[in-house]
Image 1 (cartoon, rainbow, N blue to C red):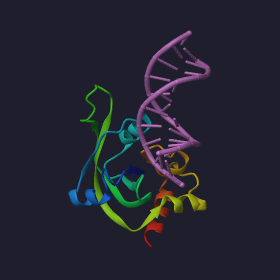
Image 2 (image 1 turned 90 degrees about the vertical axis):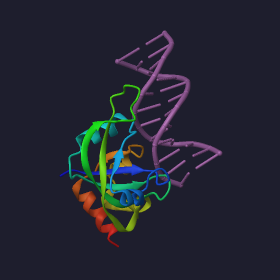
Image 3 (image 1 turned 90 degrees about the horizontal axis):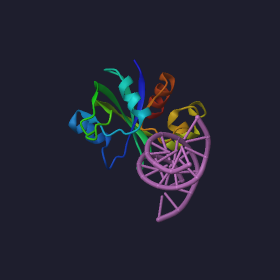
Image 4 (image 1 turned 45 degrees about the vertical axis):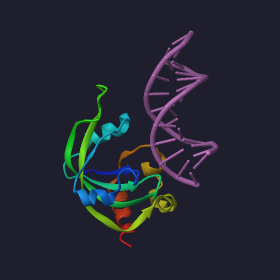
Length: 136
DNA sequence: GCCAACGTTGGC
DNA sequence: GCCAACGTTGGC
């Protein structure tokens, strides 16, 4: 199993909405690195759900419930992909970007090293550590 | 609202 | 193939 981190602006699509709806098509990604990450995602892979712009924190866990397929919003003939996510659970407490930046064991996380990437792999130990921080 | 970081585009 | 210009993302 692979671990990931996915970003969403909460006023566009929040973790609460994912929990309410039960599933969500993750489309509209227009960055090759992020797209390649979507394509590498396997059924059951888990992803930290991060709220960007507002919140600035990991708020929950999602899982891949459908592997990549052509992005239905890619009307320009572009070679883009989408996946589907379902909710796993919310974290007991949010793990903020500030906290992650300040943590000595999380300095190599791509969230910090490449702030603009919206779909990124996360090492298992980092994933587990963030879950621990989120357990409260 | 500003700006840094990064990716993409296009001229040469 | 290089690099300047431009656009976008996202933190502050």
